[in-house]
Image (tube, rainbow, N blue to C red; front, side, top):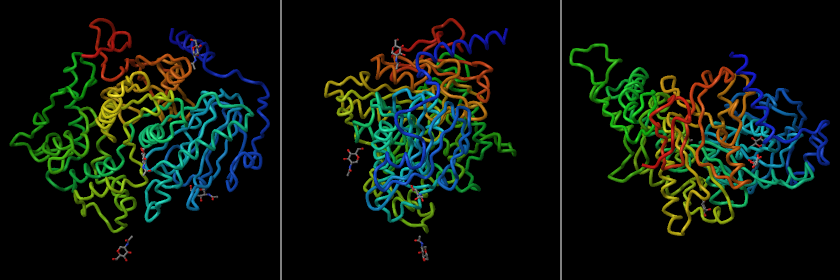
Length: 554
Ligand SMILES: *[C@@H]1O[C@H](CO)[C@@H](O)[C@H](O)[C@H]1NC(C)=O
Ligand SMILES: *[C@@H]1O[C@H](CO)[C@@H](O)[C@H](O)[C@H]1NC(C)=O
Ligand SMILES: *[C@@H]1O[C@H](CO)[C@@H](O)[C@H](O)[C@H]1NC(C)=O
Ligand SMILES: *[C@@H]1O[C@H](CO)[C@@H](O)[C@H](O)[C@H]1NC(C)=O
């Protein structure tokens, strides 16, 4: 029975793939170019350095050479989903600077171009993302934005490097990536796409604001768009929970009981008991339920009054002197707070030291709210993507699909809602209906860009950037296994919108029974709705089946 199901699934995949994947050309003769250092060099602007170039067969393993990928923090080997030319090159940028780009050019090219975004401080080529893009047949590119590092020390007294990081390297990668792709294949690119999450989400929005010709479709996940505030917020939440021996400190054990208590109180409030919180903003949560009884001595299983205050701080907007600074963490994100609040995060301390230029002797104990004003004023590298008037991108026909996990523990979901509201305020008076070009999907129970908690088991797989690296064991899983179609895979949804004019009215998110082995089958699926609509249970049918739910605006 199981075997038959599997067989059927595989056949179904194959049938679906036919629609989207390019025809394979045996022998894979390509354009006029070969995959060699010299040949690639001739396609790039003068001054470029090709660090290496090799052709790989499908299923071969590519390991980015560590000497050129020192900042990489993701998995270090990748299985090529199809035969392709893979290379890395350094391109020059103003001020005598350079950035590195990683490129994959499949033999059986689908005629389209895909740019991948970064994570954290963006200091490495996102090889996992470009190789995942090659699965679809894209010619794909990613840049390290000009530095190889997971920190930000490179930014100290380096205005040019900051600009490269903020927007310049990305645009340069796209412009040169497109022209080299067209020369390599001897053919024009039909459509150009972007997919990124976190820092990569910000990069996508920045491009839509600044370089409207770069992309036809931009897929933006959990964008770190409000850089000048977010980096400080990343640190302040750790400061609120420090030091570790203070009575108000929440330990990992406390976070665990908090995560469970939130589900206990919030789950049923949306009308369906399924361990998921469909609308965290609608949950009326009382951490006071966790207060220790007077006679308790083992306090890792309950909270003291100071700890309850810390929970309230984390669950409420950051406000200074009555002024709103940044949105709060959502109910149901607690399951992964431990990295965020254990200590003031590097994403914040490095930002202050090297991007706000306060130097290596600065420590979080020196924190002062004056830094907020300084950060707003400096806006290092002009990285913040806060030009809400996206009408130029709309007018040229660009499309945006934006998503954000409702249980994001790294970038509060509210920052995406805020952005969407600001864009609405900027465009509605111009008579532009956002749904015509910009669709925003909230993903209940999804954490930062990917994943969910063991308790919630929420559907999160939509082929967003970085998600494939969390599926399977060896980096060989792509898209949404068994559901490679425009309803379940956000890349295919975007292609269908841009190329066929079919807008995504909903996406269906998937949770596999075992993320490490998707072939074991699906645990549950649920529609994601175009904001502000939400998925509501129809009242009958399996709650784990997508068609038992409908999108409704309340
Ligand atoms: C390529 O550029 C990166 C910075 O983006 C730099 O760290 C690296 O040293 C450069 N490689 C060469 C060979 O110049
Ligand atoms: C840190 O302080 C020391 C001693 O005052 C000084 O010599 C050093 O240059 C400072 N480092 C930075 C990065 O500002
Ligand atoms: C900064 O970027 C925004 C787009 O996000 C753009 O509108 C603005 O002109 C840029 N400012 C500078 C000084 O380059
Ligand atoms: C466009 O629509 C056709 C017909 O439904 C379909 O076969 C094709 O895959 C679609 N193209 C894209 C890029 O989604």
